[in-house]
Image (cartoon, rainbow, N blue to C red; front, side, top):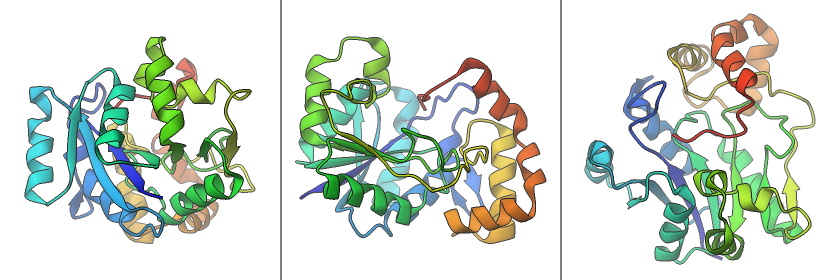
Length: 247
C-alpha cells in the first residue's frame, strides 16, 4: 500500500493572493501543513501539486529550496493534476489536503486513512457529514476511484474539485465518513481572508503552533467569542453555499 498525500496549492487565490507562502507563527502557511502531515504514521509520501502557470514558479522555487517534492499540472482541471501526480508516484491511495489548512490534524488524517482501509471503501472523508472544524478537512480516495473519475468526469465542477465525481455516486462507490461525535463545524480555521489569518495566529499564540483538534475544542469551549473574529468570512461561504473551494 503506497499512500501519497497530495497537497493542493497555488499562489493566485482570489481573496488572499499568495496565502500559501504568507508568514504564520514563524513559518509560512504551507510549511505548517507539510510539517503536520509529516507526523502521520500512515502516509508514505508527501507532494505539493501546483500549476504550470508562471505565477506558481515562486511556489515551485520554495519547494526546491526546502527539499519538498513538487508536481505541476493543469490549473483548472485539478482532477487531471491529481491523477497525473498519483500516477507518477505509483499511489495506491491518495490523501487530499489543501494548502490553506495550516491546522490539519495528523491524528485525524491517520484515522481517516485507517477508516477507509478497515471499511474497504473507495473513499473516506471527515466532511461528508461536517462535524469537524472547517480547516481540518481530509479526504482519502483509492487510485482506482480517482482514475475512474479522471476518465469519466465531464462536468466542470467534477474536474475542478477532484473528488466530486465519487462523492455524488454513492450507489457506485462505497463512501465512509469519520465523525467527531459532536458538531464542531461552526469553528472556522481555514485560510481564505485576512480575518481567518488573524484567528489562526491567535489560536496558535494561545494554544501553541502544534494545537490539535482536542486543543481547538478546549480553546473554543473556553472562549467561544473567538468565532466572531472571522464571522464575515464564514458568513460569505454560507451565503453562497460553497461545498469546496479552489486554492
